[in-house]
Image (cartoon, rainbow, N blue to C red; front, side):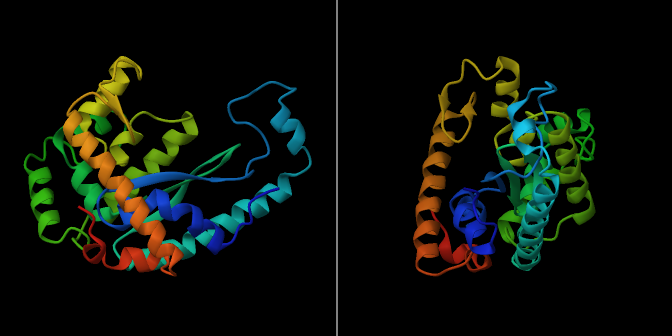
Length: 251
């Protein structure tokens, strides 16, 4: 039976995944809202693909489901924007919709790092390139002063996320998505170089650099998830949780 597409159902599954972003502990996160939204498997060209066969004649139903989810996400995005956070559907897959949530000011700070920006530039992203030396440091300092409400280059950031969406259309999971989730550059590069093997430890991502820092972050994200889930059960909405991250700060 398909999951009902309602704002309540969506928030119920998003709250745990987005908790570190809601509380300002992480620039962004991505989660899968499970369900059937596409009529065929985008990675399969076989005529006898079971997914395509099962979905034959149901294209209109999938279109209706996509429209319903897009409406819910767009409505939530409008509310979250006032609280310094955004969300959007980034890709459709046979198993569900990939929904991306981010804190623009924190994400721009992370993408503005010279190492991150250089890698993204080579992949066709309009990132904050290393030539703009010092921008990453200024963004970091500004984010420390006002981490959730700082001004950011909205057009540039939207263009970067648009490019990420294009990359998801080109391949199942583009490796650079780690940068858009706030992962350390050393870990993203290590994952690409070692093809996901020979990592030092594994949690929310595979670690190739600073293990101690990564383990601290993993534990903090779990604490955020538990706190957000408890508050949500008590009646708080996603927007309520996003409104004042400092009030819900999880060390």
